[in-house]
Amino acid sequence: MFCLFSSPMRAAEDPDPAAPKGAAVTVLKAQKSCFANIVEVSGTIIAREETQVRPERMGLKVAEVMVDASDSVTAGQVLAKLNLPEGGQITVQAPVGGVISASTASVGAMASGKGEALFSIIARGEFDLVGMVPTRDIQKLQVNQTARIKVIGAGEVDGKVRRLSTTVEPNSQLAQVFVGVTTNRRLLVNSSGRAQIRTGQSCGVSVPLTAILYGTAGTVVQVVRRSRVETRRVETGLMSAGQVEITSGLQEGDIVVARAGALLREGDPVRPVTASAATK
Image 1 (cartoon, one colour):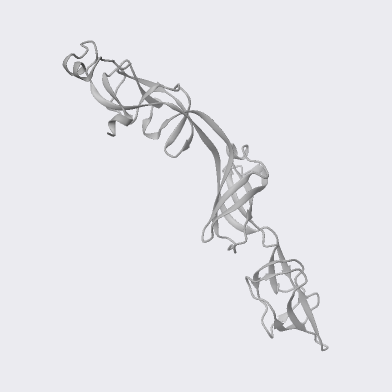
Image 2 (cartoon, rainbow, N blue to C red; image 1 turned 90 degrees about the vertical axis):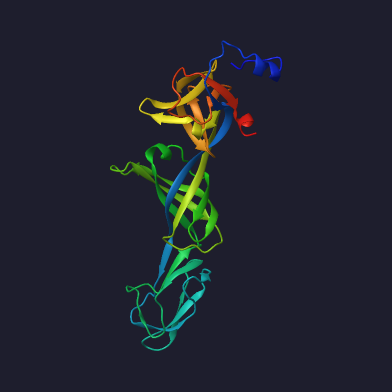
C-alpha cells in the first residue's frame, strides 16, 4: 500500500518509521487488454489450377505464336497456329481464361498431343498459399476465415482460408492449409509468403513483456504489496505489441514491477514509483 502524507514537506521531514527501507522500483498496474488470436501460416505460392495445352494430333509444326508467358488470356483465345502435314493450318485455343505461366511454343518446333505442352495456363489467375501449421493451430482455423498475406516481391494481399487438411504429418505433427489469394497483381509461382489469419479475440489482464520472468520455477511476475516484493506464478496467453496476456495469477489493479529482475527477491522492501512518475 502507498503511504499518504498531508504534504510533500511533511513526507520529507517526518517519514513513517514503520515503512520498509528499500530500493526504488518502477511499478505499474495490471490492466485489462484485448488480444487478437492470430494463426500464422508460412508457405509457398502455387497455382490453384493449371491447365496444359497441347494439340490433339501428332506431327504438327508451329507456324505462329500469338502469346507469351505471363500474358493474360480469355477462354477461346487463339494461342498459336499450327501447320498440318497434309497442308493447311489449325489453331490452338485457350480452354480456360487465365495467365500463361509457361510456353514452349516456338515457330518451326514440332507439336503433338503427347509431347511437351505448348502452353500452361493458370486458370482464372487464381493462386493459393500452401503452408503447414501445428496441430494445435489447425483446430482454430475454419474455411472462409479472412487472412492478410505478405508475399515476397508482391507486398500484402488479401486472402481467405480455402481448404484444411484432415490429416497431419505423423513425424512433424503439422497439418496443411490452403489459403486462397485475392489480388489482381501478378504473383510468381513458388514465391514465399506468410499469412496472418485472425481466429478470434481474447480479453483479460495484461502486463508488459518486461514484467515477466521465466525460470526453473515457471513463469512469474513480481508484485509489490505493502511495499514488499511478492513473487506470483502466472499463466500467460497471447502476446501483442510488447504486452502479454495473463490468464491466471494476477488480478486487474495489482501493482507489478515494470522490469522484473533476479536482484529482487521474495519479501524484499522496495519504494514503488509509478511508471508515469518515473519518466518525468
